[in-house]
Length: 408
Image (cartoon, rainbow, N blue to C red; front, side, top):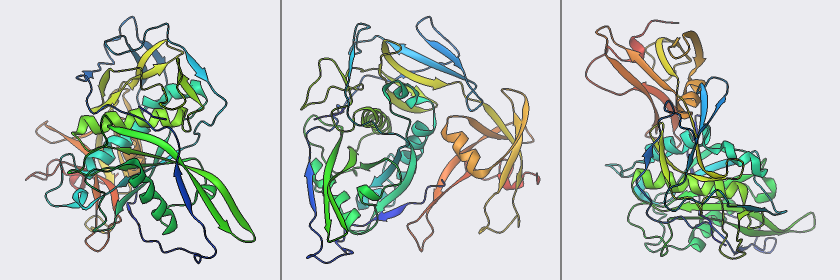
């Protein structure tokens, strides 16, 4: 709720290594009213079955990458009634948005990894951002967000056990000061900095997540004077995998449509505790293996979760030269789109994007068994900058290894 490319992870610096002297820079960071309140618990997720289209669902044709879009509507306990209305304020909506994922704290990088792991959270977020889930925000003047950069905090930089939103704002402030994040007036497009809190920390009472904005003032005389530029931020509390992805989805659609409390609110509106499109919906759904929360769609007059019918994509060949050099990635994969019975050949990057959208890639072994192709993140031992790549789940055979497939 909200109250009033491989992606290359980078360190979110908190050092105040100012590019300008203290005499030249006056930095103010003031939290505004608002933010997003996502409750720390939610109803059991419904597993959506896009092939079983009910009378209260809408099916729309769209280009492959899912084949059909199914907009499922919900009227369960806690979901808004069909008579619900919204107020469309004159304030900002986020468009062409990049969502930076920031993992704060050493716990995210410990061995053994937390449950869920950093990689699982990134993949779930990428699925939500790349898939059809956000499509109904367009009716409100926003546009779906896309995955930006994945950041991890420098070792030793940990949030307070009982953190506040101001602590998250201070992290973002220091990261801007240190140069890891751009100043608001230097952002190439709208940006949402979303911080995942680590295990072992406690959110403020009755909050599972929050989105808000902060004012940033930068005085660089005589040529660069920025007064009250707004940076959009959010955080998600630690919990189980379904909880994190559900709260993430909730905060994203609300930040897109009401980033500053004067955009889209559900009636009755509230200037302090923003009553937003996620706040009036309670049903969660499991779409392509990722739990998301429904949100209010005035067009559909219901709480909705848009979902694709995923494509079944069998990989039968790969292009990689030299084949056995671990420093050269797979360039392309090819095979048969079994859902639509057409051949495909795409780059590894496009394959990752397609998996993020919820499509199912697999390899068939000579004995007929299938191995799923997944997206993983590799962190070289000399760097915390990682790269997303595809592989089958590791086992003790080579039958389902991508590199055992013939050259395309």
